[in-house]
Length: 93
Image 1: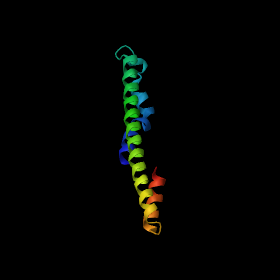
Image 2 (image 1 turned 90 degrees about the vertical axis):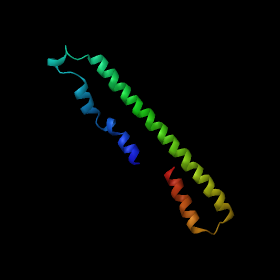
Image 3 (image 1 turned 45 degrees about the horizontal axis):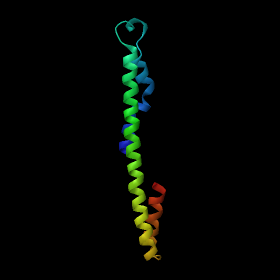
Image 4 (image 1 turned 135 degrees about the vertical axis):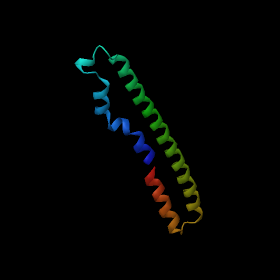
């Protein structure tokens, strides 16, 4: 969760990023706004791709844990602690 929070920084600061990327009238001739916008877009796409990969990896790992816990639950249906752990992991997914 902490990693995802850090990875959202660029999204959370998008207004600031846009304000610093798009030049004001006094800097129009000094900065290539098109190139700067392309770079901002690319950094946003890279961040989204990385975040998506991490989220999918987390879902896959947690789903694997759920599958294992379900199998254990089949064998020990009276184990309340196991049931609680299974529900917690299912909620996480």
